[in-house]
Amino acid sequence: MAAGFKTVEPLEYYRRFLKENCRPDGRELGEFRTTTVNIGSISTADGSALVKQGNTTVICGIKAEFAAPPLDAPDRGYVVPNVDLPPLCSSRFRTGPPGEEAQVTSQFIADVLENSQIIKKEDLCISPGKLAWVLYCDLICLDYDGNILDACTFALLAALKNVQLPEVTINEETALAEVNLKKKSYLNVRANPVATSFAVFDDTLLIVDPTGEEEHLSTGTLTIVMDEEGKLCCLHKPGGSGLTGAKLQDCMSRAVSRHKEVSRLLDEVIQSVTHK
Amino acid sequence: MEVAKRADRKVSADTGAESSPRGPVCSLRHFACEQNLLSRPDGSASFLQGDTSVLAGVYGPAEVKVSKEIFNKATLEVILRPKIGLPGVAEKSRERLTRNTCEAVVLGALHPRTSITVVLQVVSDAGSLLACCLNAACMALVDAGVPMRALFCGVSCALDADGNLVLDPTTKQEKEARAVLTFALDSVEQKLLMSTTKGLYSDAELQQCLAAAQAASQHIFRFYRESLQRRYSKS
Image (cartoon, rainbow over all chains, first blue to last red; front, side, top):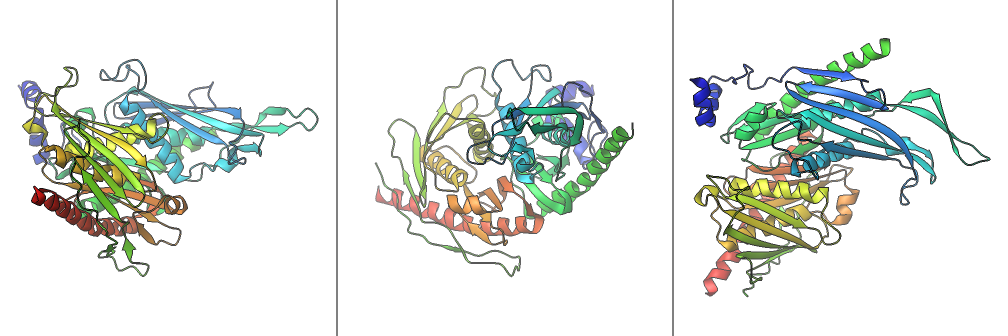
């Protein structure tokens, strides 16, 4: 009977739960889904991470290649993110050129990389003006159940911490690059941006970590990307119902606590990998 | 073709409730708006902020493709064309921001199974482009007579390395700034409809920028009202 009601009046069905301050999957309004992270699973990539937030699954693979540095900044490398939402993850995506959702998410990830200065592009330079690293970060969603931005940001952060670049020396005589695969070093990850997404319901209620259905029924979304010490990298609110300053403050405090949770989880995982 | 008023406004916006020792006097650039300048679209507007200029055209409510129709409300589409080059991922992102902002204010339920298309063409970019696009879109929607529950406006502010706030930054100020924040605010209660930011900043600075943006939006809404009054009082 509940299933029938849910199909006919999904919004009313949700409102009944929200009145009791909980959600159909049993979570509180401020509770995140179980997050698991697995790093280093792709052996052919230089760095990889798989993040599962409830059902939403995103895998990030990073490949490093050589390139000539840009002419206007000869001491910098490149970091090129790309988010792919294949038809596998949800029935709403079709094959073909990237749809709007994928493009918007790619732009969001590029902005987070740029704003948080997570990798200093100068660190990626091997020989100014001649050779630099370019890191291709490919994020592929395997299962789309809402809150793709949080999962992608987390996957990217975990994968970047997992990247090991070999040492490269430029041979003086031949002017060719010599790669020493035996000597690898980790990237210098300078920041820990963590994204927290909220969905706005009926212009007033804010719920954290929306699932696919909740996103569909919501009247607006908000994503806050926070670094350590409460510095904000990004406040992404693409339209939707209006928010007052007070509500924004509540979101900030939740984002701060989420940042602590995620940092702790990531540190544990990295510790366990390096101990092996 | 009716020319709405040219606002020669160098306005001062207060920095709001936060008592910050670095609260300077901020000013918006000179802005101007012209409506009903194109003959084909149902509504059109050109919005100028300093040297930044955006032309907007609105078609709607019009026929919608069956694959895109929504049974109980209008389908809103926003197309943003840059001044040079082909539209890329950044334009798609801005289109999504503008579209969601318009969807929050347009009363789509009055026109189900129709489409409302907003086309934005960047004529010149001298800073605060997204804010100018939002203002142009709002004026064009008003000119087209699309029913809305509120007006909205876009305000940009830049934080430089010392923490000084500059409203409506130019391209040079944006480049040198530590952070650039763009907000869309509604006219009824100055609630935050849309926000997109670049760079690193703290929570307190965000509140300061938001307060400054809310104060500046009052001036923009007053300008909307006056320009529309001027236009309709002539006829």
